[in-house]
Length: 236
Image 1: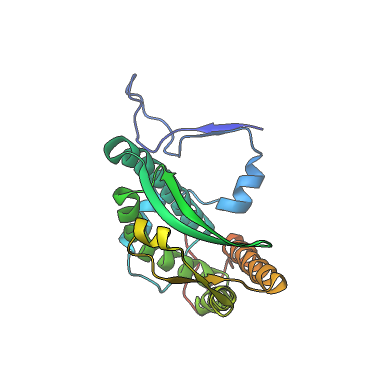
Image 2: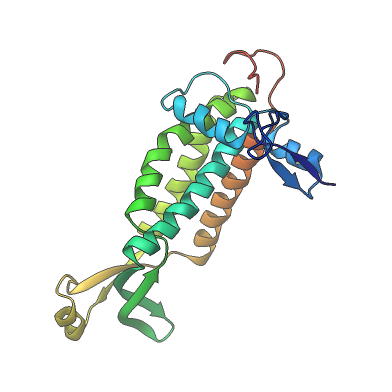
């Protein structure tokens, strides 16, 4: 199925005739599918971004699926623009790293040059700018399904703590060759290389993936139509 509606502007740019004030949206996806994810509210993408930025530090109250997920889409589109602008104005980000790898034959070392397209100051500024409103609207989205925001914080904190423990609790000191030290003075005489047990490493990533799936399920869940302990139901 496909559906088509128009941007909320009031008049056509060519004939100046008024039309329905809805979001310009054309899709070959069943509307029922998109409604399950974004919700069936009238909130457009631009309006959702404006609402979330206006509620920059507002962690109380509730947010609909449309408000949260359309803000996420807005962040994604803005990140694409920022990445392209980084390449145009600053070029690719070139990083030279000293890498030590543990193999069955022993430790191997070398310098690796990475070219990152899209990374740069504009992307970093965007990430900093949208961090607080994203956390705020995610907290309000959990309120909409009757859960406090700390449920998600605890879940991610546990996954992050397990990952950090896996990477830093099992490290092996590897000596660095004099040639490498001469080429890069910042490299010391030895380096600590993570060597966690394979089962623990796999478990940490499985837990992180599980928390990610749980987060998506919570954030995509339909909110209660009636008022709850966090406030009245969102109108959009």
